[in-house]
Image 1 (cartoon, rainbow, N blue to C red):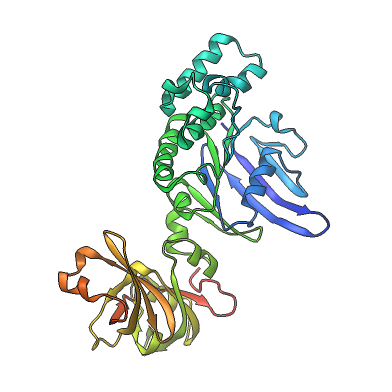
Image 2 (tube, rainbow, N blue to C red):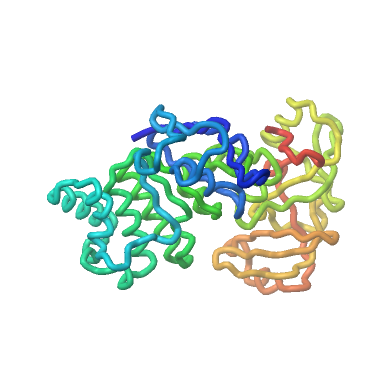
Length: 373
């Protein structure tokens, strides 16, 4: 097992294409850390620098306290699982999993023991004599994971291992990786563009954009207190609603005034605004879709909307609505609706929604940073 430390790590392609800039991160022994962000944000490049598959343009990478910048991948004691499985088609599952052990001239009885133990953990014992072409995508990915497992490496690197699977299989494999982590208990560094994977798998999440770390924190921390507008909109599905409005400080209380409504800020958010001495100002307000509720038109906090699209998601409705010319998404649990309400929520219908004062997020209009972080 090992810790990983990245200090001022940088990657430049060509003369001036900056892929990763000033990346600093300490990863604890046995921690499961996830790099997440949109395509091209530098997350896979960072992982490949840790693995030794990409040269480092600046900074240092340490594994277990040893700087590995100049070490070959085979000398870093890491195991890596790729997006495309990378199995040898002419070898059986057993031989694919045993390949790295054979190269190290591990005794045959130990090879057999390691491979069969890994296969049992992954539930692929019955496929050991088959070749990759006879396996499904999920089974092939398990073989790729098993091949990495048998190496007993210090660090386990996974580069979007589930992105080639269909949605149902991806959900299943995600659960299996959580169980696998408990069984092998090593240091994991996992790359994905899927924020659901990041939220469910990671002890901590590293959110990246344009090669720069935006925020590092637990899933709860980045969801409840995003440090800027990018993180707020990236984490959460559907994404957070954001709109320009005014934050008003009046009579010792804070209010927001979206689309002509007036809603008092309360709870911890009200206390935090007062402690920071924030006065009246223009802001970008963020409210997650699940925090909207249907409102009475007479409520001073009611926002008038027109339904554009009603997506029936089973346990909830996703209402795409238009409020004063701006699009919002509202999530309504179906269990909270009467039959008449369900039938009435159709395209073109006018509804009123609101939200509580404790669920708001406040962002600076210019810097887009969270006012309360």
